[in-house]
Length: 228
Image (cartoon, rainbow, N blue to C red; front, side, top):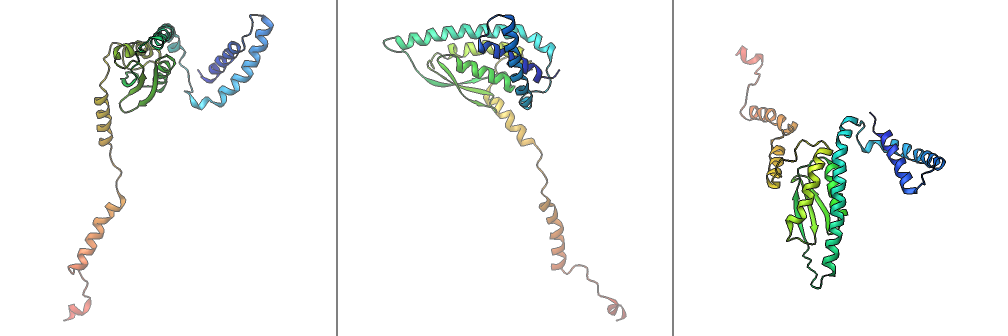
């Protein structure tokens, strides 16, 4: 199934939500038509930026995992707000900011972006960068010494992101070592065959010609030598 019509419908629903349309039949129809008039052309023009097709059965199976992901995110959002407020109002202000490397099991762009945005939207943490070779996020946290407390919610989100985005890994799989991932990618790149150098291929023939000229290679003496 084509993806862009579904994106257009989603944009129309977002239009209704942003506009705060009351639950009245005529108003819903009017605003819904406006949302479709804006969302459908916009989704069609931007269709190159997402996959062309849409796997409906897989999307339906991912709905429960997406719902749990949303609940976990909202819970962490509330908890993080209270934690940051406590640290800011505390007389000693127990804040120890630092950057943590968080290796990931998800690999797709959409999954990594979803987790990175979830981290940034949660108070006290910020996604600073993503290393594709190491498949790791660099997260700025105000409580760097409590690394387990920072990483634990990210791992819970990732467990459900693996199901939502149909990643090859399973939630029970261990977190890969970033150094091993980087070493593997480097070894693969080193094994890639190099393109032949056309100039290098022509050099042996040139050297053979030059050597014949230097050593006085086969020379045609002509008919006069035969007569003598």
